[in-house]
Length: 137
Image (cartoon, rainbow, N blue to C red; front, side, top):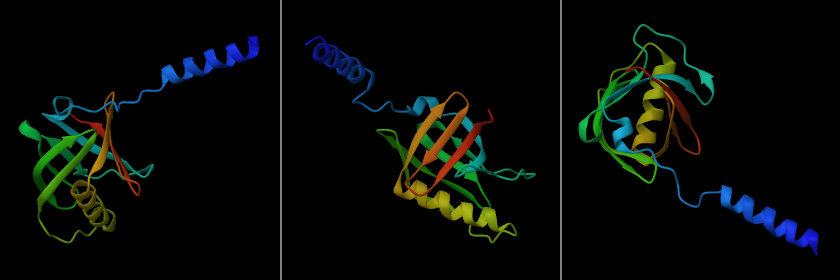
């Protein structure tokens, strides 16, 4: 009997540690900040003179640069960031990694990416890709 009570108590204790609601990043935490890309799927991005960046302005206006510059109106809902109708320049880069990153980020923003902000690190993730950014300002 003591074992059953102990197991039930332990189960309730563990259940109390799990949150049913998502902890979401708020727009206020992102607005007026600029982030520089650190890694893609865990692999470091090679340092460049103009590293890829992502900026959040007032009212979730998003702008940035990979190979091409892009901008759009962001929407944050339940920890997911979407940017429909992203405007982007269409130049071909000499760096194939930056060309690929243009396509990856464009698809992520259009389809929606889960957002996590921990300390000075922003993570945008989908089932296929994870981009990790470092706070620049």
